[in-house]
Image 1 (cartoon, rainbow, N blue to C red):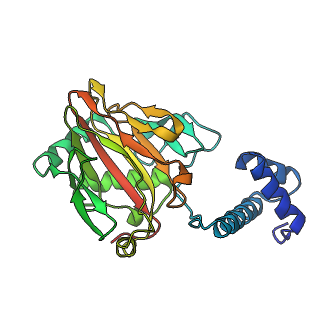
Image 2: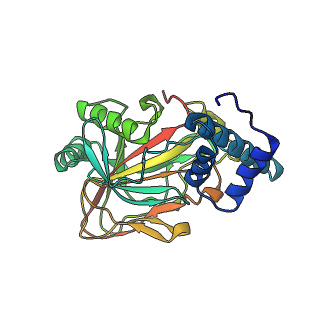
Image 3: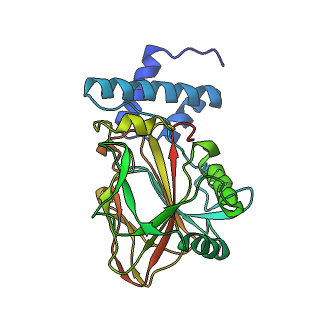
Length: 283
């Protein structure tokens, strides 16, 4: 069965199923019921759908689809057993791709990250895609700092955990960014990918390619405010200590519906650790 060809009829059937809104799992199960080996069926479906997406993108002047991290969620489990920690799956959306995890970090890990970062905070900057540099942006009113990848034993442990969670190479991740939002501070809705139309983007992409996913970890629970908002999905994720929200974007385009922001903190402060991951190795 491993050499069964992908006929034009099968290719069109897979495309038609996707266009009709059938989830990949249902298409795969139908192929298995027809006698396909699971590995062969999955590869065939991926190749056909990726080809169809690329054809659509080229025909409409859109960026090409790229592979993105996808946490392993067999059978829609409530609990995931990582090598060093059990994590809860609290919510999952397909479009946009958003997953909320419970207990990804322990209270002690959250507290220690804050202690390690506090003395190095400065006004947060955003990447300036016009030049490839960074700048203070009025849309982002937090304080922040970056750890280099693996800079401390705690960073190294968390990065290994995140790589296992996302099933994505550790070396494709940027270093952890720690942010502190005081009362009234916010980050207005934005995209995390780098705009291909900007002149500074090629220089940014020279280090690891595009960003393809984000993991935002909450290091404390502010009394009021500070949710992570996804306007296109009308979704708000409450900032609860130890929890995290993951979202991916398979091309640098608003069609990913990955627009997101940090709502203003109304009372207290909010601390987050953000992990961005790239297509390739980030050095």
